[in-house]
Length: 159
Length: 443
Image (cartoon, rainbow over all chains, first blue to last red; front, side, top):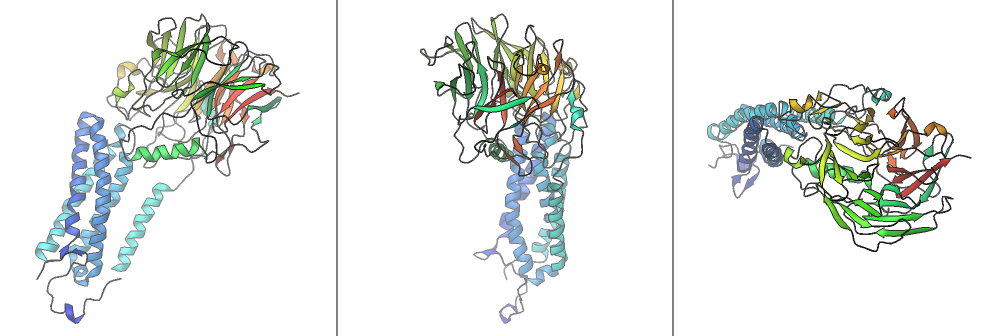
């Protein structure tokens, strides 16, 4: 349930406020580097596997995707709390798109984890590497939108 | 907006449900995968491969498997500790080889511990006897089906499976070596320690760990089976050295070579009586669908290559293997007789006795441990393949069934090794039921 931010104490605030914070710093941006790094890394190791057929890289990919899913889920919780916590955030157009794209990336990565759990070559080629690539492309756009929310719309920025 | 979020969450959930749903195999005429020319559907790959295990619960007192008309089944020995193989010595004494699995493989992928957990559920049951790695000698000299003697012959073995006697020595195939014990039939305890004759590929990765054993008709050579170290080389091709093959071991020197290769998980090698032709049952690969790839019974040619991992049933390429080896695939031998997909054929014995109905004479009894890599269970029975002129001929038949409660998805037992005792009765090692069963003619 959204919290009513029209309390007198909040009246003078100008920047949309982050709800999930740690000592005043928003948690969501602390966590997002993990899934982004993991999913980009998985695309890189997928490419190396597709070129080398060395299983080491395939295992690397599935662990990266698994770690990306775990850390991405934590980032999603923090992000969702912020999204629901201030209606001024929800009012920003990039916020909803940012969320939808990230949810899509997470669902595709979950499917990708199942594909990557197959035995042998077809764990990566072709479906696995395609999914890894699509996820990275989506993260590029959603990351840009997340940047807009902070650097342009000053979401979570202190007064 | 909130409605939108909920709607999308529901969409995501339904997507997931779709991948998990549809828990039944497509309709298929299973009999089309029995015999020399099995129907092979296109390989399929899954997000979540079809998996169904039937957890073991053991037999209730007085309960037993069902047998074909004209036969009768009784427990010869109960309360064993995971019996996997039975072997009959020249004097009629029966050896029950019991084994616990070797230590689990190192975890390489998040999938590994999950798959191990699922398979474990199917092979043990709470409250049942703990598996032990030992050989128990059972003596039923008056052949009334009630043994007079039951004694542990060798204890603390290393996951044994195969055993064979030749020339006053008992050869035991542990998971890591063939070990030789001086032994004269009639003995009821070992007087000398075993000596390693030949080391076999084992850990640290030891995927298909059962090593089975037989001796050539002239008594000079042993044949040991060594299963692959993976489903389909997902542990790397270097882990497959000496694996997926039948080894020929010189009984005097212990020197060994690969006799035939490309046999994914071969077990229970046996020479067809009166010939020099070696036969073996083989467990084929998983995760290509509920109806791929059929397990099989085949004669084994010297230096023959039978496909694994590159291809199955001759030249049907497995899309999961890179790099491929067209040179090997070109000479891949098509196996002789398909037994059905995922039946997990582990036991094989040829029937030369006279006690069972004449119909069975000269044919093969096959212990099918039962499936996990499909929704509708297959195997979980002892089948019979008729032979004519030393070749399989005609449709396989069910001989011993009723190991599975299909409705409750529980198994009372699971058949593994089979043998024929001195009187001509069929013996079956049942590793979940912890029993050796004895099948005789009904009177």
